[in-house]
Structures are given as C-alpha cells and as structure tokens.
Length: 130
Image (cartoon, rainbow, N blue to C red; front, side, top):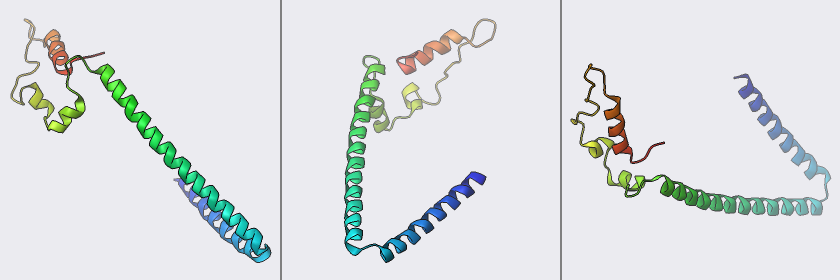
C-alpha cells in the first residue's frame, strides 16, 4: 500500500512539473523555437506510434505461428486439434462417454484402486503424455 501511495505522489508531481514547465517555456521562449520543438515532438510521437503498431502486428503473427508449430508438435497422430474440439462445443465428459460412465472404478484384488487402469484411461483420453 505504501508503494502505491508513492507511485501516486510521483504521478501528481510529474503532472504538476510538466504543466508548470510548459507555462514557463511559453512565457520565455521565442515562438519559432516552441513551434519547432512542438513539431519535433509530434513527429517523434507518430514514429513511436508506427513502431509500436508494427511491433505488435509482427509479434502477434510470430506468436500465432509458434503456437501452431508447438500444437502440431504436441498432438498425437490422428488427434483432433484442440481448437476444433472447443469449437464443436463438446465437453470433456462428452468425449469420455458422459458423466454416468464409471471411470477409475477398477480396483485391485485387495480393494485398493488399480492405478494401472487409471493410467490407461488417462492415456486414452489424452492421446499423449509426458
């Protein structure tokens, strides 16, 4: 909370200093110098805006390409694309056979859960594992 207070104080001080500085510059600087500086600042702003827009567009394209590459590398042969499954509206329960299906119901002869059957059921659902 203390940090947030000091950040707020810093913002307020910055705004006040900038406003006072503009008044002083307007009062004492020749008009031609002020106009030239204003144009230079606007030009720098346009260049920065163009740079940010270009960076964002290229970053988004590279991220999408890398995501597609990683998805293709992780999917097992014949496994549907997760985006296609999501788009179809199927829930995980629908893919496993519905909520009434008894998963992990197998147990060892001594009554404990059969971990081998659980692993096999998970492997069948995932299609791949690490």
